[in-house]
Length: 235
Image (cartoon, rainbow, N blue to C red):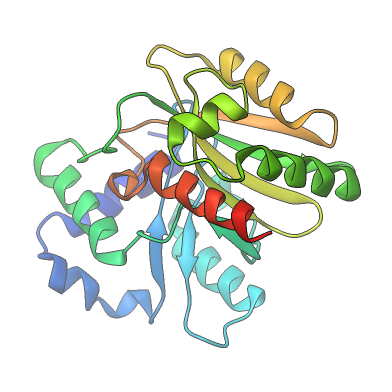
């Protein structure tokens, strides 16, 4: 069994006999809270959102996460960024994250997202920050005064695809999650997101494994689009 798969299996085994309250009080968390863990179907990406105590630094997070995943050995390399801006993650909670893993251990299945479709993750490797900011502003301008998720998808000309999350990670990186119609492939999403962003970014895409992606139950395109519309209306 690959080391990373074994690490995840052991993590779930450790949690499945605990209540949520017991899991919350585990001293191993050291005051840190993991809020989201989407993993790719190919097993080549796991993206986590962590909330650390006030005053923590990027170095603090790097040290903690490296220690947390140490049992997997060199099978995993952790890249850490501070989140400088976000949309769509306001409903993430540590309690529901833990409940997902406990449920997986007990039943073999996560609760999963509250919306039908295939989830995709994209790492935007920003090539031109000024052009990226201009594109971002243009996209927001298109949804000013809109009301619904469907309004946003139509304004952005992305068909039935729906945005679900955006996190800005500085001048060179951003990450997003999207929901595509069921049966969509990575190639389908690659084509859509490359057209959406244009040349300011190189887009690295991953289809997500819904049974190994904890806390997607708290993700919904409506949460994301309402934040995006509010931001657009205020700008």
